[in-house]
Length: 324
Ligand SMILES: NC(=O)c1ccc[n+]([C@@H]2O[C@H](COP(=O)([O-])OP(=O)(O)OC[C@H]3O[C@@H](n4cnc5c(N)ncnc54)[C@H](OP(=O)(O)O)[C@@H]3O)[C@@H](O)[C@H]2O)c1
Image (cartoon, rainbow, N blue to C red; front, top):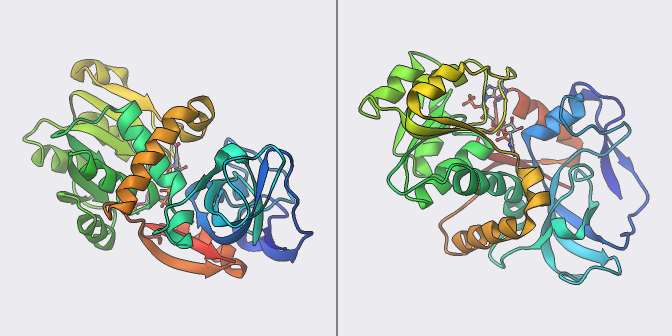
């Protein structure tokens, strides 16, 4: 098989494509012929050695794949060779073959192509968990989404609308904001100039947003705590800007508000049944044409380093994928 190999932790420049022996599934594994690999921000952190999941070089990065089942271990019952699936692998995805634990492999709807399937589980799985189980977003509430032109951000715009919220999309460029509008955002804010908190208040009758979805962190998070409504919920999704915000707890006290952690990977392991129900809803929305991943660019395996560099440099709109 062909695979992208990370031989030392750091910037992605040294990633190289190598020939490796073909894979054999263990008893609880599914082996997949990979047609598309999703690229996610955590992949950049894993290659740099700055993520909670540590991988020892040499390793194959890449956390989600889509393709066709080629072999299954003896304990696998829910899929068989020839099935079209998507799977989470944590690492090992940037290759033309990957093995995934059975519980992380899901058959995909007939209408979903492999690029879409590779761009689906991580961002939509995270967002529906965040908005349903963690924020309990209610119809008619205002949802403020930061990083709204990126992977999880654009998914939050779409699912927020499907759950009946009024969505305010915030991002750093007009291009990303136009994309968010195209996918349903009701209002937009460019946070690269002006006062972010004043703009949010202006669009919420001075009240602030009911739910804030923040995959960016850094200084913008401080503004979020000033622009949150009474009983608001601030969702801690990630820290793409690098800085982990510190919260002055009096801000939460004054608004009767909550800061709510979201860790989708741990949720999948601890509450697989609820995650499965979330995906039933997501796949139903997809099949009804209500949910579409936006894949702005695809790359061959040889350009994995470029794909990760684009993500690091905030150049990605929606999702990107590697096509082995
Ligand atoms: N909690 C969970 O379970 C979970 C699951 C999946 C992902 N995440 C986290 O969510 C975050 C976003 O992931 P993603 O895959 O959606 O990434 P992404 O597509 O790259 O989106 C991140 C967005 O953050 C903004 N950003 C601001 N400063 C940035 C910087 N210095 N570098 C890069 N981006 C910056 C960019 O939007 P602007 O240019 O518009 O500011 C970008 O579109 C990551 O921190 C990831 O680890 C968490």
